[in-house]
Length: 270
Image 1 (spheres, one colour):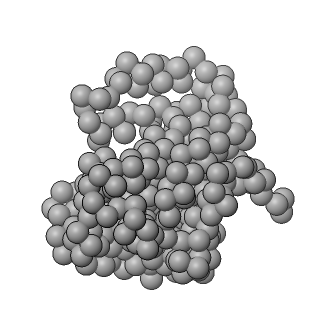
Image 2: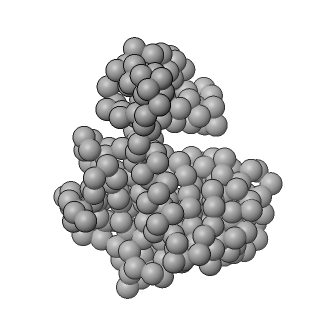
């Protein structure tokens, strides 16, 4: 098995790696259960952009390092200085919003692989991903009401899209925690699997996506995101153009030929 290729990032606790057609964003702060410090938030957009720009990458997996957490939230030890009031919190909130937007708007499909704690900002990062798969004993929660903090509107929209408005209100109002099994029942996860199977299930899902037509996936992602996002902000002309481009592509010809030949297609994203 070929070792992953590491891409440069601005914070060593945010790692970007490429192995074959799969890119991986790793949140690597296990001493603090992968809590996101300010510098880590700042590093996420460029790391995602680097993975999207890599010519070999067709799908991006977002995960936490180690066995204890996906992301346990923002690093609360910084709040007394970086988030002590509305003025000082503004830059911090912008860094959060930009990190979530980088994942949400990534030009390639994203999968959150969730083990252990997925709390607060970790939930924000997870709901920004296109797909989420988790261990059945993972722990999910949004403790904002216990900390007295507010959430960026775009992140709030992601939560509502993931679980619906009533369940989103319950999660925020009560700050209660969910198991992976319950999160799957609510539709937050596409599935919850035993911890021992999580890596293999995620790898299979990523490989399946990577095998399919990249232009079709790009067009589908853009259209679905436009439907569930802010209609006033949607670029419907771009959505239409991406769908139409599929029919002029070499991949469409390859898909037809492979189907008639009863073989697996080999798509190039062209």
